[in-house]
Image: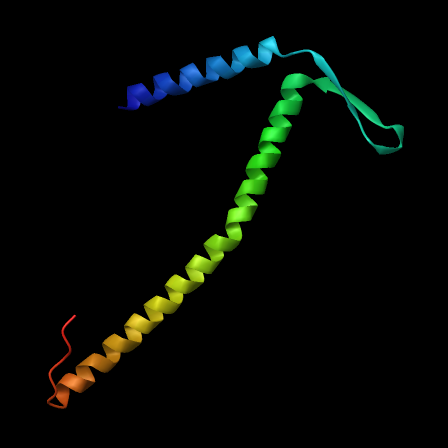
Length: 98
């Protein structure tokens, strides 16, 4: 399995390297106020891919934090109910079935 993963990584590396070699043409980027940059196309693609990945990670970060808070709240609620459960069993009441 490890060998298969390394073969796939190597294959992906050579595919991306070939893509970079084929797209080495210069691209001119125009900004406001007459500013412009001239960069290789593969660099522009790499920067845009990285920016998109970072934007996606930051977009899901809020949902991740919300889920972690909810998990913490539910764990505290479970711990509280487990502390109360033995007290009701000691009073002679039958514990509730789950």
